[in-house]
Image 1 (cartoon, one colour):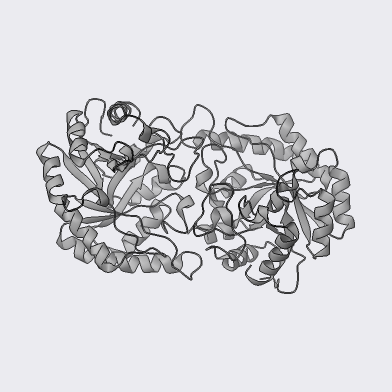
Image 2: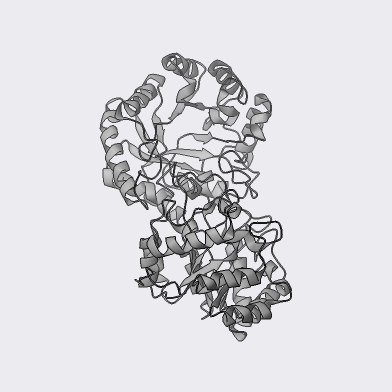
Length: 280
Length: 280
């Protein structure tokens, strides 16, 4: 397992952690301010969200690399299934944006249950078809697609993949070199079958996300914990992922409307570094 | 699969569906009012919560049976793990109460992560020890203990069992005739491995709970859907459970602070019957 106690190069900030940097939300920082603050603290990378980039994706990506970091990823495609699924054009545009930014991968949160269907089989079938279709385009631009399973509380309207094994089955069915999995400890820490699924995912893990599951989670979306404040066994999870060959960035992604989004971003960035080097 | 279109004898009301009948919550009905209303509509049984019984468990149980129904279960033991775990005496008292009421089974919601531990292994070990211990007492009073896995959104402070397979593993380890599983569609509908786990649970399924998972679930605890209003494949789930030998009551348990708890209880009881006979 990599030793992070003195090395921050694998540490990446997902900008959601600072409240997405949007005007009036969290820090309200510009991408440039985030880049400078992360670079100053020795972060290795940043993951952006589409809405933060506007028409400046290339410029922002360039600035990240000029600051000695990497763009670690882009969040995310429009939904591929469910009532709010995006069109093929919209999904292709998100792939283009990832390429323009210089991101190696684009996260997929699948979207929910297909309208008029019950259970998950129809949705998974539709998902597989759409991912396979867009993977062919993405591979031409060098973009990897990372399927992110979500906690089952997000069934219905946000996801039809709930475990790493769910995602792995889609990957195997599509069998494309650029279709893999993003593993977020918040979503999968509870799964007893996780170590086996991670082992079988060797070569297909495209992302690893850090935060923590708070013992008393108070809100479905916006009450994630800082690493070390919850009950997830972060070191064991990272060991499992690294034993399966993952050597990429560890992306800190904390949605926290009532706590971390209200704190000064400098403080948040500092605490992340400290926790990353001690409890992760 | 049993034909419910003309037969309501398997239909049981979990009193939580009427806001627990507590003063000022939901119906605010007495147990007697619930019993009479269910009997009048042809329900086959009722599941109570401990706090509704006071010192009248025997009397209430008697009244249910006198009305031609059965007590279908009792909710629930105090937690067995986590920060809010109950004492052995408290757990034994809940078993005594189930016996006094004449309930065949007592549901176990396990409780959360053991204090000072990360992940779930320590909590599951503690859970197994405590269930095994109390099962020995329960068997003397003819009470079955039904481990209920909860949706992973309840990890941390409410459960350390998230899937039917999680519960089945504990059952197998304890290997007592009165330790089994309560399967609630709300908690497990999303699980792709569920059909296989249900099949392996033959003989160990002590309860089956009906409600629905709403596409846009708005609250972690109190936004369950009426059968037919959500995306769970209820008929497939019931078929799987019955194929595994389950012939017991189907217990309708809907926590719904902003919808069903606000409606007149007579209306709710009527709609349950209609949905039970059509979409379940």
